[in-house]
Image 1 (cartoon, helix red, strand yellow):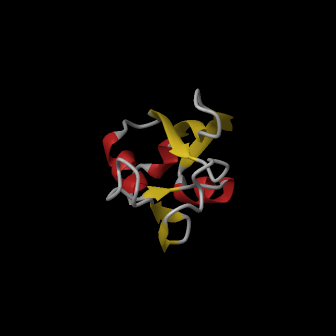
Image 2: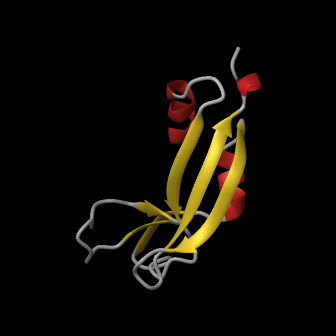
Length: 96
């Protein structure tokens, strides 16, 4: 999982700033579902690129070992384009 790779790259108590597509996004549920919450929209520019749409519970699940400093679901410049804005810090106790 990508979060494991992120942990390997961050320094002790390092910060992570990222965005994730939200399930409030206007394209959530469109196209072919390849696993829960993950879709490929065949008629889009990125037609072979799966997009996973996150809900808050998943973020907490995937970012175990991180202190979620800020986690907000915000609409981007395009109407209906919702993304999670995340600021997190890798907890020092996660390192051995």
